Image (cartoon, rainbow, N blue to C red; front, side):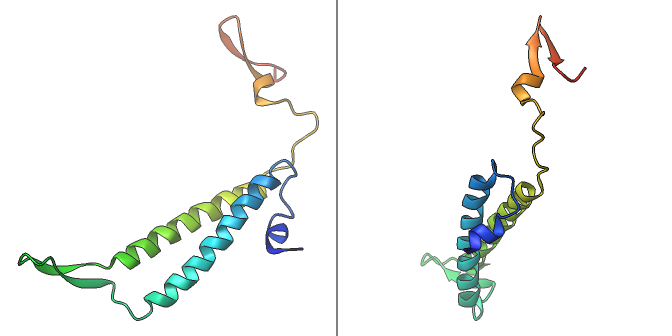
Length: 114
């Protein structure tokens, strides 16, 4: 069993392909975060700049900004995967959303949920 299969083993069958794709992306992002973090170990969070036109100062290190963006994406994707993993199993008698919410005579009516 590979990492993706192990991660998605408890996901409902109909959601597993989506969870597997998301898990693969998470593993990729995790690897990039590890590589980036190692590269940032000796860098400053802010760096000096000189635009060559007499303007100098200190600015945020773009490498840290990119790392934070990657980390944010990782956290969002992890939350989505967690949602897929904790989704309750579908009940065989459950009606689809389309079946349950049909427009009947101009009114929205929850069909089968009377």
